[in-house]
Length: 479
Image 1: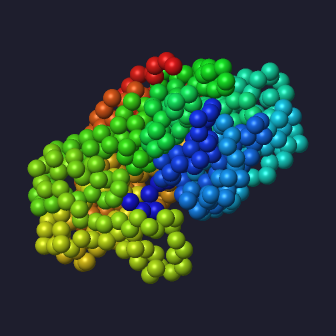
Image 2: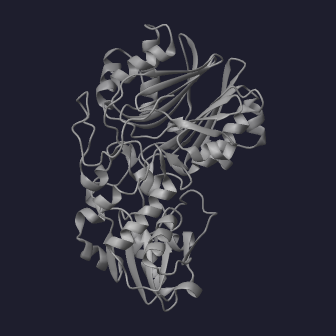
Image 3: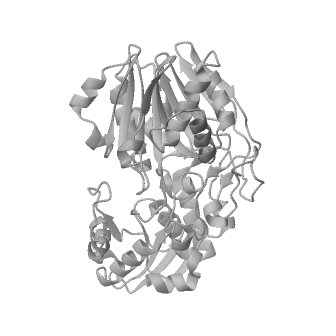
């Protein structure tokens, strides 16, 4: 709903063989479809007749690019893009992507989404061998490994196979050279990545929503552990290591992904709608109106209303012109920021018993302000909180920016204490069993460590650290 949520680190996009249109402009439009995955930086690199030209800067896509910049990028046949988000302790400008570098075999551009788990060991190896890294970026580690391995192998994709054996983590990667684009997904399938087709062109994206925006047809999801190589000869698939069990981040379906996306066979909207239906059966409420927290909880609120028979309505209006989180120099201004982003509709909620459906509660700060707003500004008689996920009790180790455990409200308080803290008249969370029933049609398993504390990927072992109860589907199909 606001910045009081876990955030993905970024989104990636790539296009090859734009014979009938401008690659830079097409990727620029496509980045709007994954803007929600990163709102602090944006960048595009273009293959213009074998030369890689790029532009990246801090800000939203609309702030970073304009007609002059797009004209400067030229009309090349291929391009990759990136939208980024960094933690407060990181430099946004330093981590902006795509990362473009020149090495012994030529130029390379790389867009990366994810998190490496063995970063410290790899950095130590680089330092011992005399390599100097310019940033704390995982993307730079992968690029450095690729340039080093490229000396040993005939092709870049062979080098990437070797690199994927050395790195450990969760990621989706798109790499562009003067004569090809390469896309890869981590062996566990934690981060999403899909492939589409636009006329004679191949497109890769973190989410299918970007494909829809540029008019590309969805082809399939990239298989966990798969490398796809695209050049003028077509598409080649390399399966490096496919685990029998995969672990898509289930928070993609709860909150991170755009509602109109499809990920690993599952409709994000359908999953959230189903979560609302199941929650209405598990934790009914005696109320007059169901409302959803914009935007990620709207589908769940509709599902809750349909299942419960309670009228659905719009109780909160979102200001869609805020953009990035603005500077909040004082506590009073930070509290007012909630009202700047959201406002209660008194005409809809006044003197009513309201069910407020939310996708998750992390710190609880924003939720407290929203409940207060509905009662004081909106005049709601009661506010019953219904959360379409289990309590978030554990931080993410796999690339999602979550607070430390000691700031997660569900790790510190019982449900009854949370109810009192946020000022709700009642509160209920979706059960874990209920959550695992929501991804209808999913072709994968799931990581739900932020809810159950079961981290499926060990930092040191070559295989996942053991199965969890969140394995739902089978392995993906072929090309």
